[in-house]
Amino acid sequence: MIAPEIEARILRFYHAEKWRIGTIARQLGLHHTTVRRVLARCGTSRAATARRPSMLDPFVAFLERTLELYPRLTASRLYEMVRERGYAGRPDHFRHLVALQRPSPPAEAYLRLKTLPGEQAQADWASFGLVPVTGGSRRLSGFVLVLSWSRRIFLRFFYEQRIESFLRGHEAAFRAWDGVPRVILYDNLKSAVLERRGEAIRYHPTLLAFAGHYCYEPRPVAQGRGNEKGRVERAIAYVRQAFFAARQWRDLDELNAQAQAWCEGPACERRCPEEPSLSVGEAFEQERSKLLALPASPFATDECLPVAVGKQPYVRFDGNDYSVPHTQTRKTLLVVASAETVRIFSRQELLATHPRSYGRGQQIEDPEHVATLIAAKRHAREHRGLDRLAHAVPGSQQLLEQLGKRGAPLGSAVAALLRLLDHHGAAELAAAVAEALGRDAPHLHAVRLVLERRERQRGAPPKLPVTLPQDPRVRNLVVRPHELAGYDSLAAASAPILEPTEPDESTGEDTISETSDDDRQQ
Image: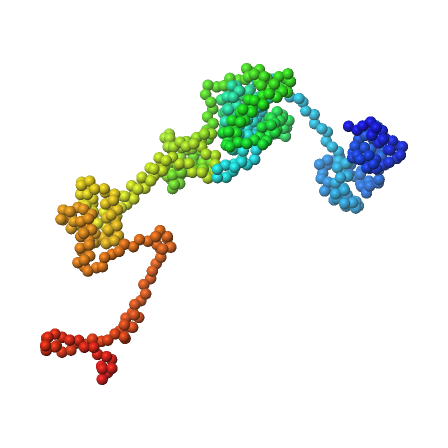
């Protein structure tokens, strides 16, 4: 507010001293708009103030006539038109002058909407930005449902805005209120309206089924009429300022628990706009009896979608991998997910149940699935070893049968025979097994003794096992042997030549004498 003595000084300076508005503002330390407002309030119109001539004055009539015909014509196009007609001013100043000449549309008047208790509610999503989760980040969204008469708010947070979460928010609100409003207003969001052309509306089929189950009418607001759902818009702004600002929480469950306590506490203590003598909580107690009764059973809000299993026994759902039995690879299974669990079906058979993870890139496993896969892999390795032995050494089957009758561990026996096969070859191992069975000695030690005896009889040096490291650069290294013919020629040139001579008369044995190259030449 301007003090009366300041207003008197402004009027005296303007009318008696003939000061300009800018001069008055500078001398009194005021803004020029404040000076203009005081002069206008005291009957001095802007038209009475002296105005300097403008370069646009010759074109004002043309602009008024053009804007009357085309009120939405842009200032840039008008600038090009007046330039062609001789205007020499700059475009930035022209935009300001055109804004003064452009006729402003009449302001739209709105009716104050009144509703009856239990008649209407309004629903909408609110975005609260990205929040960190295990392995990444997710977009946090708040579902807000507010009763239009009592202004009772229900708030529930989700990590996405799928139709299933939208319906879960409704269902949780109905349970919290122990009733259903007769009409729920929606903005034209995809969870409610799939397509709209004027008054022709194609609703989301799942939302229609949900509304039919709870016997309420889904009603979208008119396009471009945000005022029709102003109650939920103001409720979202109230949630942002009074609840979410500077809020600390560890996970989604804790945040929703805090939201429920806030809705039942501070949000219910504010004044009810429809009945200022009541609080929101008191007004809701009066409205509760006007709500529709809940049906006997809830609506199924689980997410159901087919998922293909690759060569690894996992299904990918919502950015995470969930384990399945290893027998289900290369199949298409059905995932049924609630807010807490993920169930996986094959036709009507339940294969797995996991707690739902809202992280990113997580691997959720059932320990039984992993143990079964490991056992199957081990069993498969044993079968591969038996098949290899059966093909390379047919007599090994009879040896294993004899070992089984004696109570020997067959797994270690198969592994030992495979090592002997790699070390001595199929022919030697087959001969050793046949000899051990022929002597009625079906033992691994007997087979090893036979192999060692046959090596000594052949005069072969003992074979040393070569253990290579797991480094593939060493295991895959190829060693090419050198040609040794050059070493033979060097040895022949330097070694003495041994020649047989006549037998020795004293001993009767042949003698060998060394002859050099010079002696042979002589």
